[in-house]
Image (cartoon, rainbow, N blue to C red; front, side):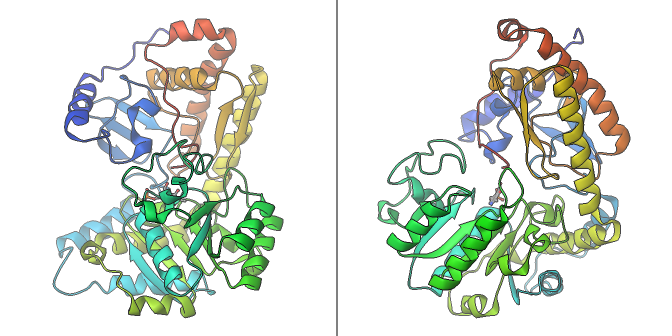
Length: 440
Ligand SMILES: Cc1ncc(COP(=O)(O)O)c(C=O)c1O
């Protein structure tokens, strides 16, 4: 691979400065350059369109990541942007509310007939905190059992107050609890996906009133597990919440749970990411008997009344319905998984492929960190933003996927031809850091 890596001097300089004045360097953990290619990652974008991204150093890339699942209908989707721009020109925030939020709420209820009420927020962490507040407002059993990643808020990270490892496997390993009030100790407990016995024991011994989970983790939902949970909730008057901030609107027009028996449906659910196709909007939907209590609590925020999010979501949903995007995305994901498998096998590389079809990912079974760093470096050299996970988008057109696989094959072949020491010598950056275990 003798092409030179692209010049990203400007990006590196900005990031070095950023770390001096923005603690942590980035606002979203997953967009830390160190997770991808330390000191060489392009870091900042100047422009995006369809499947392409231009960085601040004026390099153009094909984006095979679409981090973190916010643009399933492609960057700057023509129809969605047209509606958003039209709306911006008429004003985004005003003394009065935007009526679009009512239209959006109606649509979400129509897609999820088990739910009768909706609230909106702008981030997934917020949506989760709102759902927890609503649920706690209607149950005397205030403790929560969680499975999966649910954002950065205190109610969730409190799970690590007793042991820093409690959230391992759900989010980044060993999250520190500095800044989280110690009185939240013993209010939230974790259970592993598939481990019903652990959950059952929590319910029996820890005064659990709420179960909050991602209905799918690295594989498709485990129906038997979910059915047992739903039954447990029904028997113990526990509120069941599905966090579909990532899984929603990728494989169906709504929550992934719609693809399964209605017995499994939750009491509350959250959507984010895909819902606004690049614009900030999250929704919490739920049963009337729970949601109506919001009116007696205080859940309120100025910028939840802005219009871009709701207009974007309305036109995203229209566009999704028009082209049946979830079918296209699923098919593309299946194609990606199939071709990864073929090429890993062809070059005798042991790699595990996982994820639902719309969110495929792979892990090298040996020297994963080293091989992943090398893979990212070589894909970047060839003009691709690529990692071991793809948030599949309709912008990943057939031709783009074919071109991607040509380069993918060359990189995989070279991984197979070099032993770990040789690969290390070929790295122009230090090893990538290991971050959130999965999707964020
Ligand atoms: C399932 C789930 N819940 C919550 C969140 C948090 O969302 P946000 O980053 O918008 O706060 C994420 C983000 O990755 C997520 O995947």
